[in-house]
Image 1 (cartoon, helix red, strand yellow):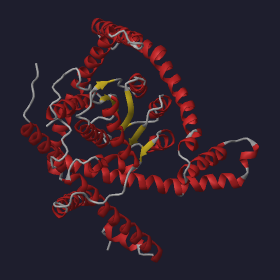
Image 2 (image 1 turned 30 degrees about the vertical axis):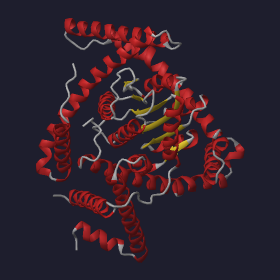
Image 3 (image 1 turned 45 degrees about the vertical axis):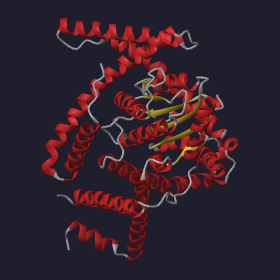
Image 4 (image 1 turned 135 degrees about the vertical axis):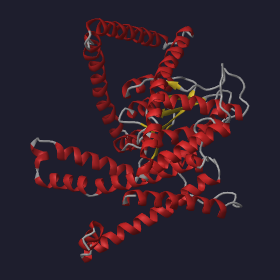
Amino acid sequence: MNIKIKAPISTAVAIGVGIIVLLGYFIPSMDSIRFILLRTGLVLAAVALLVGIINLATVHIKKIGKESENSGYSLILLISMLVTLVVGIIDMAQTYLVGRPNFQITNWVFTNIQLPIETSLLAVTTISLTYAAAGILRKRMDMFSISFFFVVLLVLLGSFSIPPATIPFLQVVRDWILRVPALGGARGLLLGIALGTITTGIRILMGTDRPYGG
Amino acid sequence: MSATGFTGIVVVVLFVGLMIAYSIIDKDRKSILIRPIAAYKKIEKEINVSVEDGTQLHISLGRGGITGPESAAGLAGLSLLKQVIEKSSMCDHPPIASTGNPVLSILAQDTIQGSSQAISLADQRKNPSGELTGVTPFSYAVGTLTTIRDDNVSANVHTGWFGNEITWLTTAGERQSSPTIAGTAQLPAQAVIYASASDPLIGEELYASGAYLGAGKMHEASIKAQDVVRWIIIGLILVSVLFNLLGFNTFIEEILAGSI
């Protein structure tokens, strides 16, 4: 079944809600309406999570059927999803029977499976970041990349506590880099992002950008 | 109304006014002069490559929702997705989209369906997905890796809200020898992108896809409006520095505090 709201209606609703929420930020008397709309949005986002998980499961069920080299991963994902769901249901049933929060098995799964995996992935990210920083000169040999590379090197050196890196000059240079050019650059980028955010928002409010299929 | 609220309204009205003014002024011009951005040229080139080779573009939209400060980056990514689908209407295989946020996933599917219908892509098998690959940063990155490693993917475009996990996506693209165009609103991740992506989008460049991919006059006008406001901000910063040097800063602070 494909239910689709006609474009002019969806556009009008999106623009109307957007304008009310925006005005709510500036005009205190419209705050309550803004909160109602935002809370409705949050509830819809929670429903979307359920839809998203069903979508994720559907995509991976299809992948298993295709006999591709990644179908094994899809199978593992589906089994994990099912086990976590069953564990959650058991814990909820126990909570209902005992009469107080009882999520022991869920906590065990998160502490002994999810947490170690995510921590390991974080460690791999560190290696991946170092690899990326080392490869920048191979990718783009221009003035900006060279300065990026040497600034990273200098800041890293300034952070070490072993003797050659502890000379005061290095630490002064590192502090200056972090306080002046890095902070200035970050503020410049943030200003640019803020301007980009405002124009994106206004384009959506004006209906020029319609990222909802309308 | 507070001073902040008033300033906010002034900024919004200024932007709207400038955008409308520029869209009217440049109405008859075929194209306006904007500085070239290598990443957008690369996207256009890769769209043509995918048409010729029968390959696909992969667009990952990040894991930002639509109710927080990360929403604009996600919406900018959706806008880019729409442009790419419309431009790649000749492709045998339209782009694949992946997200790390359920709301964004639904919006991506909606955008894809809307754009595909607009360009008469009736064949459902050819319609691109809008897949939710994971809901936490790492699960999203790991889930997206399989799409990047797909042999039929010729280039990867990562635009939206990413953290440091983007290094996994950009590095995987590099290992596949496929061009990687990436942009995010998060500052630390921008440094990662600059170091690891073949074509990075820095700062506000992330939000300018419409102007560079021919989405219409209003997109180009918004770029011009942004430039005008940027000059106003530069002017205000210089004036405040001058006031600071001349010792007027305390005087202004007292006015703002209402003690004068």
